[in-house]
Length: 565
Image 1 (cartoon, rainbow, N blue to C red):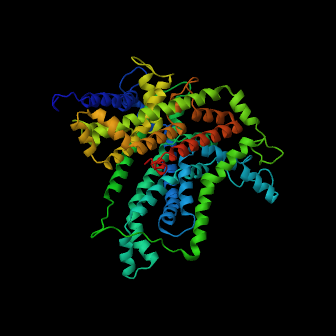
Image 2: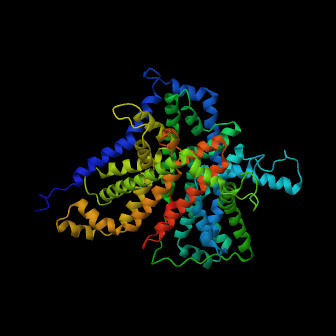
Image 3: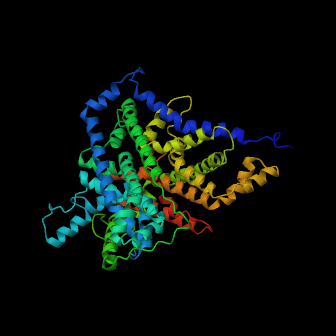
């Protein structure tokens, strides 16, 4: 049978996947726009936006969110940029463990980190405040740290946002050719002058892009503000959107409040792409020389102490607080041999009725979303990387478009789209599956598309010449070659599903509750011991998945799991 006569199923795959992406992306955003410009009777109106601008109860959360995002962006840049330089370009001791511990904060859900800092820095019961009062013999009303403030919230968010800036800066410094710094040295430049005149300017675009990522992450974050800002008596835009779904629900206002967040996300992502797109440098005349670490001399250990202090705030102290609360009879008291107990584990796994259901739902959704998302990303990356059919550019756009949709905005859009006919998915796990696949598809697609660039098309062409279809070639030839990247993508999606809260908190019901929502609900009831047990369980499961994946021969995706940028 000739090439022209052979049926190519990829021609049917393109419209099929385009239709699926339409349902995942365009439909919820379309319903979001419809409700934003509608009143209760379904008539066109601009009153929703007018209310958002004129009513202080809506305007103030947006202003607070902007101020918070700017503060977090500046602090993260000030902390992460020096750390990135110390790890990538100096002879600071323990650089690799520092980098790995920074990556560990990626798998720590920000809402869980906020709860850990509640345990550490609540005004009355916080462990750090208790230790301070005991050490100084101070009165019970003396407070060293108060996490329930604007700056307390900013600090908690910074602990789990600075890794985004760190990764961009460290990766940029890793790629800077050593020849440029060698040229500066040969011309008489000192190490400090070379860093100031050569290295830092070349890494500056990555730093600016990282600052934008930190700003965007803060603007779209729901968990940490809900846990720390609401008890402090103020809202940010994401918690305000969530509050509009409390009784009585106001879906029109929620949709109107979500659209500015969506537009701001699009603008910031475009700005980030332009900043990174301008960055470039080429070594003329051959391969770049090996980077020689900058000697810090007597500053080696102070530099490490700085990095260790940052990691204590983001990883070691929060994990220690969760461990203390999980095994102490009174979560707010320091753990000793006399108050050590396993009773909290017994309560969570034997007496708390919603635990088994939440774990079951989380595993089911994690495995389903990881499998569906990986298959989606693989097929779309194959079609776009090889330009298999017409329309691949539109397909690529649809696959990456969800990166511009904040989780809570997507949750609102899916709620509006699937709470009415012809297809009603609200109240089922299907709507959560749609949300998870949509949120994680862009990163999965970009990772697999990059992996395709490292594979020659000759083997695929040979398979086609021997009579295999494009899909058959993808299944029998390309997918096995992409094995490690596919495993990395699957693990990335699974881990991301376990920590996703923004969309799930809008879409869950009593029968579709997942671990992140269960932890959030328990925080509202103040059961910190149960939260600590579930949080440690989540972290252990995540670690087991990553360790198991890294034992697969050829798997190098462990570090990639943190690059959700």
